Length: 328
Ligand SMILES: Nc1nc2c(ncn2[C@@H]2O[C@H](COP(=O)(O)OP(=O)(O)OP(=O)(O)O)[C@@H](O)[C@H]2O)c(=O)[nH]1
Ligand SMILES: [Zn+2]
Image (tube, rainbow, N blue to C red; front, side, top):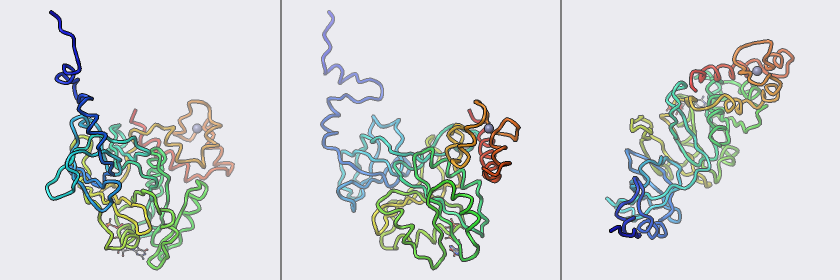
């Protein structure tokens, strides 16, 4: 005779990957809200929200196995949240993200890897010389920032060695903040932009990022979490992301192992978002124009000819569109 199913049956035969609600609900109501400040091979270093000085190690609970969790994620912890040596909490929920900085391994690969969640600002650190600035890389960072919902800030370093004017001129039309630094500059304007916000620092080796970080963050208040970023497929990169607290409030996340942002998953229309100076001209193109090659039909070429758009900016847009062209 068929028996009626009740909640107990559901409890002993949960659906794949889901825990029975009846057991989960009390856990969740006692869960401690926290922010992930480090990730290392499936271990998450978390900073509980009301007690910012305590760090709690956690692993993902069963229901979270397929959920990506990265530095900056807001999560809920249950179990041993004491933060004592050897204590391990369970991560049972990830809150919705307000932004995601992501990259793909290369431009032809559409597999996205989130790097940092919930950051407000991407600080693109670029030297005016030694090494020579690469606008193509700046543009690539801008695409990743706009695509992920982060506001960009361009920080030009080593302005004691060369004038920053040409680069400032190139990016002024886009309207985001550009700050300049040299060894003796007052960092107040940059600190004001970062105060109370979660920022990600990106810069190529040698641009002076470590020097900048050391000036922004007094040594005593340095590492909150030092971690190895684990890629979505379980392969390791050697990158150690470090969350650093700013003395005036706010957090900066350093991304030393991130050399560039592969844009394989970014659609061409989303690439264009990082080129707001060309957007008006692009509107004049025929529908379906890919803006890829110089052509009488692409309004961007006529805009450059008429002096309404910058040739270097158009070249950069075309390089990025072509680079991710092989991706779907
Ligand atoms: N003249 C000048 N030199 C600087 C400035 N900032 C950094 N440097 C020098 O540039 C070199 C590289 O600086 P780092 O701070 O190590 O650069 P980085 O970007 O952290 O490089 P990696 O550690 O390789 O990732 C060092 O010799 C610094 O002293 C600057 O504003 N002006
Ligand atoms: Zn066009």
